[in-house]
Length: 58
Image (cartoon, rainbow, N blue to C red; front, side, top):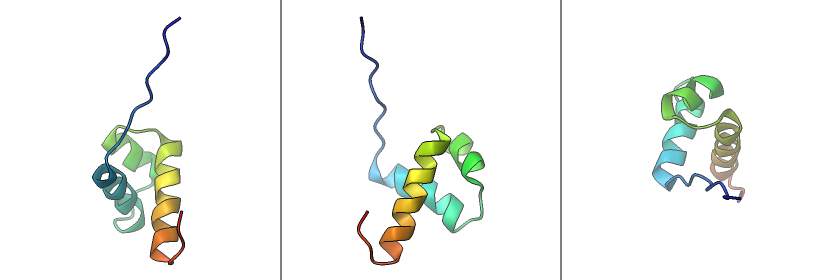
């Protein structure tokens, strides 16, 4: 049986995607479609960005 390889994304892609939601008013679904990633992935990145901006480490 072949194992599926998990996609990896650069820090720049993660930041850009999260900023679409936080700074530019995109919905998480729209940002996910625009960047070609899953909605749950975008949700995680948005949460991490908000925590970092509040001085919390993710």
